[in-house]
Length: 446
Image 1 (cartoon, helix red, strand yellow):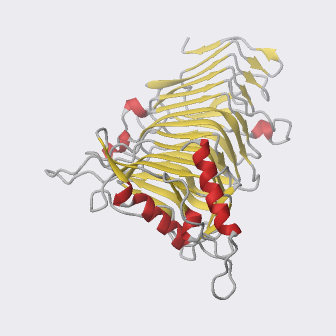
Image 2: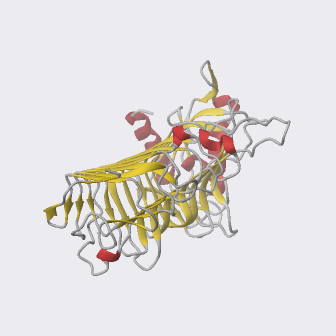
């Protein structure tokens, strides 16, 4: 959608409101006038209320129905059905009180079919706002049940008023029923949520039977987004069915220049899959009284594949507000974790800072092994902890290159920067500062 199309869509919506017609009972009619851009479905054309005084569920559902109607489909040789129109949400504050009001929850394997090329556009976060206030608990604003792919959502703020609510549940299968390629640009999440986005798929087939493989809940990106609020589970949960071995096909996630400033909970909870990139931005946990973690890498799933056990973090300023906050809590038994040019020292002047342990790794989960962990050109507060058992590390290592340990004057040991619970893990420190001075390089085993 080009700039002129957007302007025409808003002009049409504005004209409808400016007409000022009153419906019976004296309430303003919010419907836009007929006409407008032939490639735009405007929620105002379906009587959405931009004041937020009345729910707009019916209007949003009608707009989505128009967007997805067969008259607006066109065949595409690459991926089947694609759409001719985009969904436009003009400036305003729209109240939604029912689940799946943003897009209909239709099974792509059923009569609905897979739809490629969904575009939902507002006019910028806090300019076009959607408040999700369901009266029922444990509901989801929109569900992608193996139906939508190549999704673009931009220029919107989503706020939850019910802490049991979730923003999106995405379920995928192989064989063309994936939820591949979703991109959020200039989108903000506020309020209290159970979960932001949950990625899921089918369980493994019973012995001797076959089911479609869980696949293609992948290639998802967040560009210049803002994640606020609270999350009792996590903002992003990758692989909700821990027993499904094929769910490691959930992979390739990119966060670029995002503002992650949420009160409490978990930002990213990785149960299955991975290969994650976080580049630039500011990450802050704002509620010192409640626990919070940015990256929680679990060992819930019984099997993992090496090709997706990858976390790459670059150029991010982290801010933890208490000893209850963590940058990373990892129980990965292998894979690669890398922090480059990151800084978590904003609160190191606090009296609790030397006792903080914002980075923890468990190397005792399965055979005394862990991932290859690297910190390059990072400024780090408190101390780091590796949980080890009584046997030597069989795989995995922690390496620091050109880093500064701002609260510690020793590189390792009970009162040093890197600490462990059992036998020493494999570790190395090169050209690092411990406190104000350089420390001798450390390598174990030598």
